[in-house]
Image (tube, rainbow, N blue to C red; front, side, top):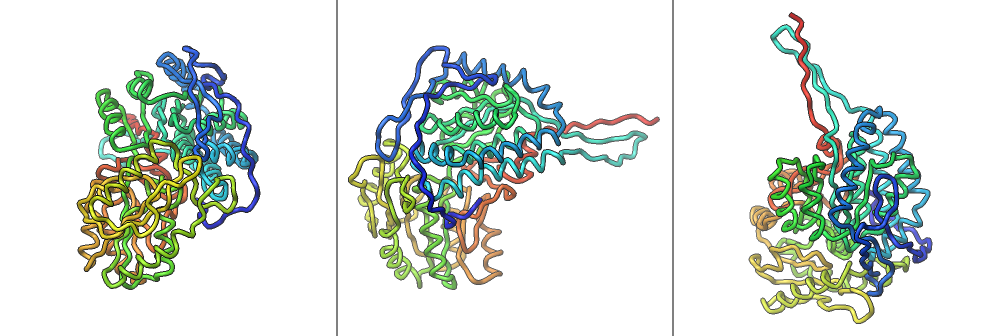
Length: 492
């Protein structure tokens, strides 16, 4: 993933968004019930378009289309699948302006970050898995009986890809690209808050040559079609990203049918600043860790743990720097912090900040909704909360940073591991031995040292504890979309 500091200055205009339909079997169609729902621009709070509100019969049709396309796609040689995935990456880059504008309008992402992060990462994912699609193979096994034994890696079948609102492009392509590379077909259900880029990507996939039925998109509400998709007898695997609560429910539904499932769930990462850290770099990384994507980042760093000797200095530096991070219209190239994705997300953050005040937390900076149209909240730093506070323990999912002090390395590790989550973690230190030692002790699927959010399609990430299981990115993700079959041929 390109770093968030590599920002272009080109102007991107708000798009004219055509009304969305479902994409099933290579065709655009209305929902069978004819119902639609509104999509809101989070920077203004106004309705920009409406899209089809799929029902259970639409899900049935999408799964049937994916099932009908599976045999042909699974039998397509990996090298040919790779050529198609490379074309997807080419079309993504060719249509980058459309994708940037659509994602920024739908999610509220600043255009300055959306192109190098969301759009470029999407292209890179398809390129990465195009390369791996050509190297899916098995292995021969030496056994003592007179037989020739080998393994095959085969696609699983129809994959239900269920994605959240915060990174629609990245978190859909992190599922669809490896699933297609391995020979699976997909039914994608994007978040109801942010369905627009999923529909645009369906068009891009078709333009690149992905056959009809291989990828299908159903837009709608999880409460209406989510369980039906997850437990559908025609679905062979579920790939889910979302909250821990919804993931736990989805896992119970899928588990009843013994379906394999990968889940990337909530996070509440700790970011540790040791006394030997480079303070300038550490404070910059800490700010990036909680304001990136307006804090709506499951691998964000909302908990800053600071060595006691540096605590006052770090809190003071945050108080000086955070108010100057540019907040505003996501289509302004200078903007770094955009709106939150919707009113319910904004209201949740307001409730947690009010609780922090009630518990004696010190609001160092921010702490309020911004007085303008849209769903904006000030980047907020809260000091002096106790570790058992829900504001520290739970996932806020907004531009809020809590700061706590620690006295020793052991205490820092205990505090970092002291929540139910384990998706990401980070530390700032100039001591190489400490970096390796602490990284090994942190309960997280990915650990960053001396920066934050260093990601690439080759680096797997995923959670432990309440942050889920399975991995996205890397060859580990590709493997999760295959089954291993053993073949043993008698030579007696």
